[in-house]
Length: 535
View 1 (cartoon, rainbow, N blue to C red):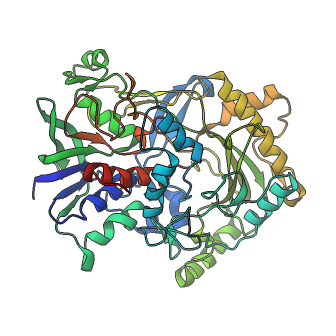
View 2: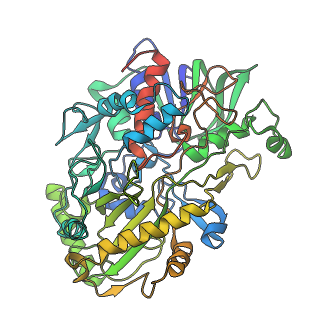
View 3: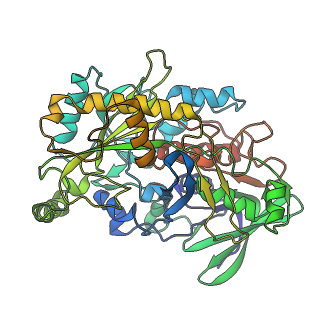
């Protein structure tokens, strides 16, 4: 196979897929996209509801675990990350959220010109084909298909009715002028199937009339370490089918492995905190202390209530029979329960009236969810997540050994800042006040997880006992100009040549929402930075 390219992209996740598509638009350049997983075309990925088979397992999933979390009473957290072309967009809940305007204006204010909301909005629009929305905030004609839900079950509507009863406004577009309020989520679906970043950006270029001969996609290929001539990145050693290949880049090497794997790859290649690398016997190429630091993630708590209804997914005899009927419907029309992303509705709410943007996010789920769907409750019910959108706590990614394929030490440091726990207590109360409204509460048969929780101390205890991630790790190769920044505002690694990082790890602060759409935006913008174009 060809081993030398103009651009070598390591990691075929959300950002990497977008970047590979845009760079290969120029037929004069050659691009390689290297992904550790498979091509991301299988039925489990395509079928939205089949996320329940992947997120809690190792199917298309790295299924990482964290170090024990002091803030979670010493529990080990779970960190699913996509291992397929498309990355975590192949196994996520497909919710299309960008974050608040203030998130990106904050990035710019931190010393990152070109990353304000007005700067990044054109890239969100360029990526998007929204089936319902257009105009100032939305795009049509882009690769990523965004649509309304394809399941007609009544419970998300009851959630919105309860939100109104609790005094919250409805919002028909969380990605428009304001995020605040409750509403249905738009999802990255196309024709009732998942539209991952791979399906949107890369699969059409691998075959058929749109095939690009200048794009080489290599799957089931794991990047081992980067290679350099002096301080210039020249390529990477990659394991493919048991062979060790040296892939090289004439112009640039781009690391796009995500918030966990990108800092790991840099560190095993000798880029990171020098003393830490030396302690593991790794020769130090470049002492860059911010690599792996600044990890941020959304801490999340889940309420659950048993409700007997076949409109809710449940592991019961009647539930299984209904899913068989619904499968027939899905095969015929691509609608119904199998077309559901489970989290069909939600809300963005403020904890304080003077908050510049919503402080917490709710995901209302048409099933009982416990321990990331790794623990089954054999009944039907509803769940509601509440996550803190801008936690103050900062964690890290560190190496456990010099093994490039070993499990890194993932420490989101949940509730390391005590104010995060207090804000979660407030978010808990706000969510509970919504869930007890009669539109929903008249249907409850059992409070599954929070019965008897009354005082603030009770709430703190149940949060520490049950909270974990809602799957949005970012920031471990942060963008900026301060001593702990890893990349500059053009995503070039400080102190090295020909090397960029392009994925959610570059976010200096966590955005207020789901992170897949922002990761795709980063890939879109990076292509223009590399090509020196403006949106």
